[in-house]
Image (cartoon, rainbow, N blue to C red; front, side, top):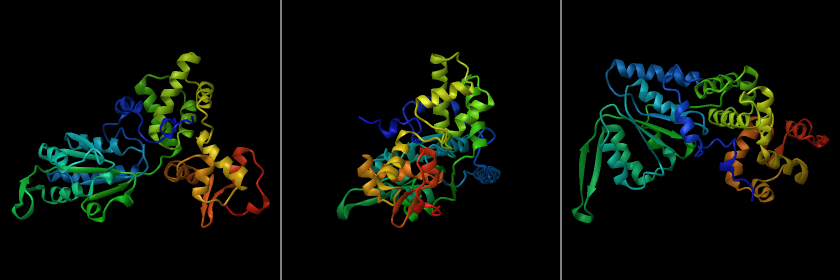
Length: 342
C-alpha cells in the first residue's frame, strides 16, 4: 500500500507529530516572526491603532496555503493585544449551540481564532454575522408561530479567521472582516533563518550550509522546514554523531526520498507518468489521476500547486504539460515538439 499523502514528510498540512513541536517553536511576537514583512507591517499598524483607541481590533482574515503561519499570527495578535486566544475550527462548530457557548464565554478583548473557517456550516455562519457586527447573539426560541428571538449582548471580541480557500467563503462573511491578509510562500533566506531559529530552540547544532539545505528542500513552508529539521536531528542521533553537518542532512533527506528541489516520490511519479505515458502531455486531470492512482482533489490541491510554482508543470487549455525543467530533473531528453512552449 502506498504511503498516504498525510504521512508525507513534505505535506504542508498539520500532522500529529507537529502539534507539540509547532507550539514550542511558535513565535510569540512580530519581532520573533520571520518573513511576511508586508503582513506584519500592516497588522502592527492595525493593532497599534486599536490599542491607542483602547478598544479591540477589528476582525482579521488570514488566507493562504497551509503551513505558512496563519495560526501563529493569530497567537501573535493575541500577544500583541495582551488578550486571551480561544481556538476552534470550522468543522468543530457542528451546531449553533457550539458557537453560542464559545461566544458567551469570551471576555472583553479576547481573540477567537477559527481555523478552516471556510468549512463552517452556513447556518452557524449566519449566527456569526450579528456577533461580528453588533457583538450580539440572536437565539431563536421555540418553533412555528410561537417562535421568538432572544438577543444576548456579547463582550467585544476579535474574530481571527484562517482559510486555505478564500473563494469558498461567502461574500457576506468576507465583508465583515476589517483586515484581510494573504500569506505567501517564503524566500530561501527567510527559510534558512527560520531553520536556524528552530535549531537554537531545539538545542540542535547546525551550520549555515545545513540550514540552507533544509530550507531549500522545505517547499518554502516553515511547517515542513521544522519537520525536516526534526527528522534530520533524529537521523543524526541514530546514524551520525548528533551534529547536523551538510553531509548528514543530505543523507537524512535522501533517506526520506526528498531531492534537491524538495520533490518527493509522489511528485516525481506524477511527472514521470506525464513524460513516459503521455509524452509530456497535454493530458487531462482525470486521466492523470487514474494513471497515477491519485485522487483528483489531491492532485489539484496538494501536488500540482508546488510543481507549477517551481516550474515543473504547466496548465494549458488542453491539459497538464511537463516542462523542460521536469525533463532535465528526471533525466529525460526534451522532445523537439515541446521546445519553446515554456
